[in-house]
Length: 419
Image (cartoon, rainbow, N blue to C red; front, side, top):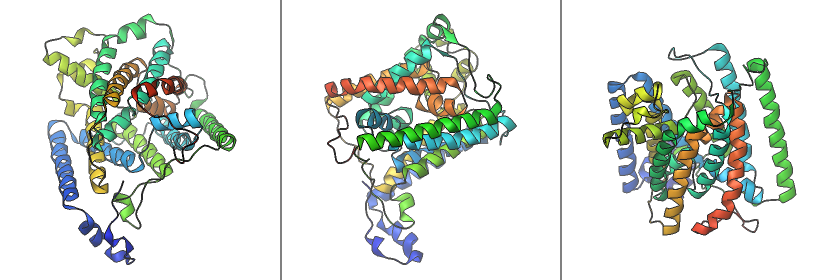
């Protein structure tokens, strides 16, 4: 995966930075330079056309993309490995990430701390048929598309050709979901939004303590599962020594989990809401429909803030600029590693990518978010809908294991050396 520099055997730490530059191949240098230049230009455009807050969100997106790429941090693969062979490493990393994020969110939401003056608001949504069905559909879709919302973006930046199809279908599915949004949210039964902090009387400290106990219990259960099933371990990612590991090698899963939690909390203090991804896909699809002469402003989804975004530049949309940052951050990181090598895809994989993308896009709109906005952001915000999303997406993953082989996709096996 990552190239090994010829200077890796040199032990003098004072020469690491020099040998690092010379170890990059000409192609890598061009890709890295191009990615950095594109990021600088886009940052300047964002600040000029919007404001410095949007620029800060773009930079956070760059950091998110790099973190996801360097650790190959997965939500899709974590669910698949758990359900198929009982490998718990990915879910354990999720629990650590959620524990750190919940701690930071509790402090931010209870104090109203903000870097920009925007009041931080938790991601709390109703729990009803739309969330249950949407998360279930998303769970199937992410296993067919071989990537969730964050996985789709960072893999596109990392050079995964099939994920381009997944992303296009994701946008289409999210647009269709926006068209049907009113039916699912107003015609289907649902409970009101439930926050463990504000709806139960526990307060943020009580809700934080409760969730930490739940995270600890889930972590303990995963240890018991691993002891019972003795599943194959995750394939170790290649790495390098010294400071080269930061840009040329791979990052430990737990390290990435903590960084993602910190960046999500930073997003909350800058943007005023947790990290999200898929609302931008609906916006992009809505703008495309408007360009084709279809008036989407009459759709229930595109009212209020969502409707205002249609008339503004995408560079004024915080979620959009963060998405651009994730793709570019992953591209620059993959270029440093030498892993940006797009390949041809098989027809079965292409079909699964399209179907999976459509299902994820549609499911995300119904469920008020994806693995990031609903699962990560929802649970960190102490919302019941985040936990409901987790359970239903896991059930969708279970069903998807029977569907994947129809498209030539391999599931992890207990006979594998690594999964």
